Amino acid sequence: VHPQELGSVEVSQYLEYLAVDRNVSRSTQNVAFSALLFLYKQVLKVESFAIDAARAPRKDRLPVVLSVEEVRQVLDSIPPGPYRLMTGLMYGSGLRLMECCRLRVKDVDFHRQQITVRQGKGDKDRAVPLPKKLVNGLREQLAFVTAQHQSDLASGAGWVWLPDALAIKYPQAGCELRWQYLFPAPSLSRDPRPREAQEAPASDASNRKHQQLLAEVNEQVRRHHIHENSVQKVVKRAVARAGVHPKTSCHTFRHSFATHLLEDGKDIRTIQELLGHADVSTTMIYTHVSTVGATGVQSPLDRL
Image (cartoon, rainbow, N blue to C red; front, side, top):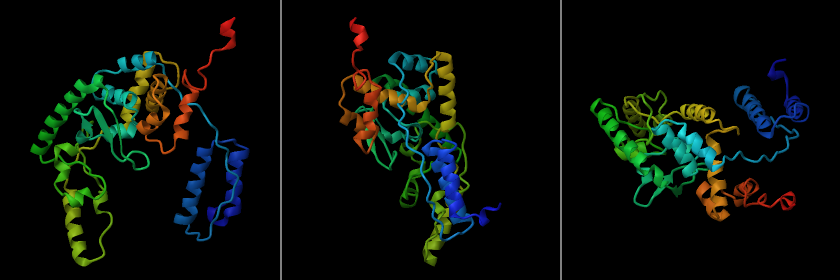
């Protein structure tokens, strides 16, 4: 049956089937919900389309947290270089994977011993601690980025993608060192659909200027950041070499960062700020995996 012949009733029945009969998670049902909504409203152009289906219940799951020794084993299994630095920052500063990939030269402050995370989840900025053990490695990485950037400029490249409308406001900022990614990609590239030129202004004069900008942006040879998939593959291989049994991903280091801070006596409000959580109730999940939180009680069997 073609989707055009089905309506909101059949779609709602299918989504309820996923939740009730297939017992899928809430996130899986949400993916199906969004895909079907896009299909009917954007592709098939069905104007009056409302979905009323029973939603899959939210299931609270405890995050996987590594011990300090397990974190050390994984880090030691990663060869020295940018990938070990990135993994160290995810654990030592509580960064998300993409926050780590998108760090720029200007975001590292050695004087204040902190890293500024720009436009994190929820489009929020925050400051996180810079681990002292990574200072030398980060200085070496900055020296590498500086030399590489000079080489790129000499070859006619050296540009980088800029957030918001900064490329329009400061046309030459994209080739400055401070805007370069801290962990750059190994190869140069051209952006086939530069975001700076996707929306044309209304007036003819502005449109001509826009077309000129489009032509200039299309000529820029840029260096993006390391792809997140490559970091995930390195971490996966390191976990296997280290013989760590818990299912570990890049985000596990962020969970471990929060839990170990809690075990060290840091208050939950401080941890919330470092993680960038909007609500402290999100941070409270770590009290359930900490040895000094809700589960940090002595078993009565141990008193026998």
